[in-house]
Image (cartoon, rainbow, N blue to C red; front, side, top):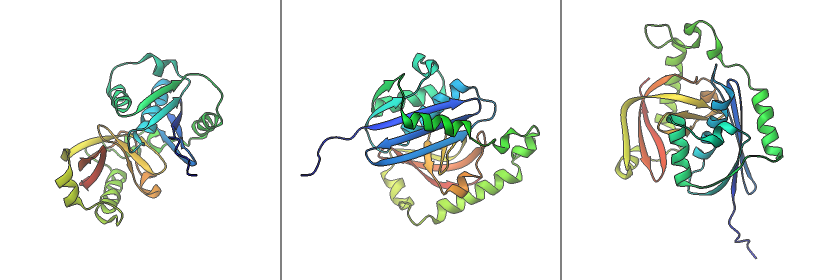
Length: 226
């Protein structure tokens, strides 16, 4: 007999100064996310991990968030908090503020082993900015992302996305707020899946000129101009 018991998702989130990680589990499925934000405090990184984990869920889901953070528990205002509230409206979210979980321990290990991002460089030019405009690293990343968006054989047809979209972003700048192993999170858009080699080029804080369509709860990139 097929098991008809509804599955529950779990988000295990951890943050430390400048780094965050989340481990998502759903039945036998598992996904790990990780990112860095140079100079960001641990509290913000824990919140980022929670938001990134919830935004990876592609349909309304019963999910338990496991995070040991009084900051996240206390609530607040701002962009990340608005994204968290949006996610809790989409999903049936419960919280575990204490307890020992192997996946949460692993998320903490991921945070502790997170490599320093090139954005840690003291010279802003080393992070892809030269004070007068985008640096070479940013331009290279935008070109790679744009080429991926234009040629991804698995992506939905752009014309169909535009026709079905309930919201659009057309040639607007959006900042990168988090970077995972195979995903980039943009402000007001959320996480977008990309090949790992492209994610490795991305840096938190870069602003990318892009177009995107919102269809059935998900954002899809249509074009990247730089």
